[in-house]
View (cartoon, rainbow, N blue to C red):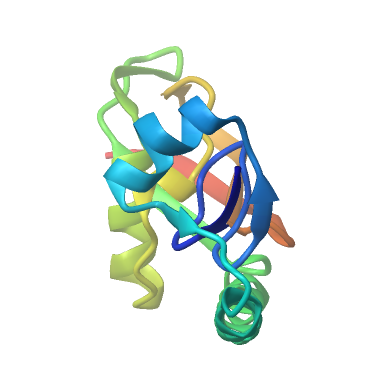
Length: 148
């Protein structure tokens, strides 16, 4: 069945894409959830319009991500934390703590889900943390954990 996506669907496609999917997938998931509608003869123009608006929004999001990256990459974010004698933290520094520190020090508000911290930081020192703001904008911020 040919459908036009109304929204981005993970591992399927993006808004405005015309796809040929299994009938059951379309009838049982995509159409009832409002993610897609059935493609007819006159829908191609509407799908093209959806793709153009998606591309414009994507370009704006990428530019905003690049501007944030230009500010954050050269900046060292300092996070104070309680630490023991050997440099081990009593707790840990999580992505939420990093987002709060970035907001306090630079005024830039990040989504904590965009900060890809594999494990919480548990030691004093300098750490590199990857941030992915857009599919094309991925960079590392330098975080310095200092004892309180």
